[in-house]
Image (cartoon, one colour):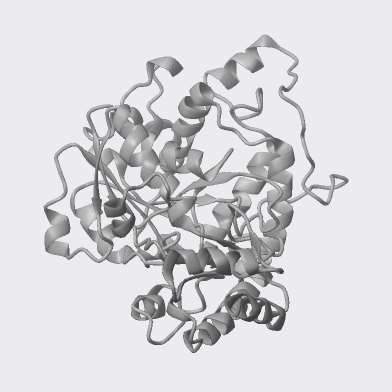
Length: 425
């Protein structure tokens, strides 16, 4: 599907049925796969042949959907995970171990911040968090000899800060490490980080990619552009023999697919965060309308943002589509066709007024979710980011009065009317 436009890949990418095969990706709801001889099975375990033998490592339904996302992002290989959190953990843990160090943007989803700052720290992986606006000179000073990766979000959740991908990619590559970018909010419809120098892309597919809040999932996609062998001493897991697979050297045996093959054969084998084929099927169905939904999400969000900008009971609005927004210039570079449907804003009166506003909404629902077809709203400081202290909240761009509204694909006049009546309560 490489020669087709992205809209066509949404609809038909990842799966090409042969004569007499199902037109729609089938749900292969089987844990295991049958072979005629022990030798065939042995060759699969030795990585001498490709094929399916146990769904914890790979499954035809999961692979078809992963292939579609890989094509959408312009990568060489990808793997689905059971959640976005698992995707981000695997992306880093595939190349970092106890004693290593990573650099991460401070403006990221609260759960990911906690994963890197607390859980991975308990595993012996140290992290330095930096403001996405950090100067090149200051960023230079954050690298250490044991730094293994740089991590950020294209569009931060919920502060909506845009990552200057080129800046972070250049510095990462200067120090011989890859840039990992979570591209959940813009999706490849609005931004393809590989085109700006990112090496690995992750998504919480639970959000826009699925689009209908019916299945949790994640994905890791590798661009194939980072030269692991050039920095062999930094990434021995990829460039030296793996004794758990008879001395296989992933970069030698699998070339540009080495990173994803190692993730499959090591992390999925040992940690098992594989999605069910049923959930992958739902994701695949959602992807078929991704290009249509993202345009409507953005169109509705921009209309609401412009309305809120003039509302006397709204103290501030954050949305990169607004010309006065602090992120507007970066948006013109990285997100020229749109960003997503998420808006952040504050209600006059602070935290109490924010809670009253949310409780008064009728169409929009208060849910611990974001980025599906239905309009929903959340107060991050008391929910998704409540594990952070005030200093950490500030660093993540989350003020106590911040309301995150995920604008859906309903009629925009109904959305605006619902917001207006709630603000008047």
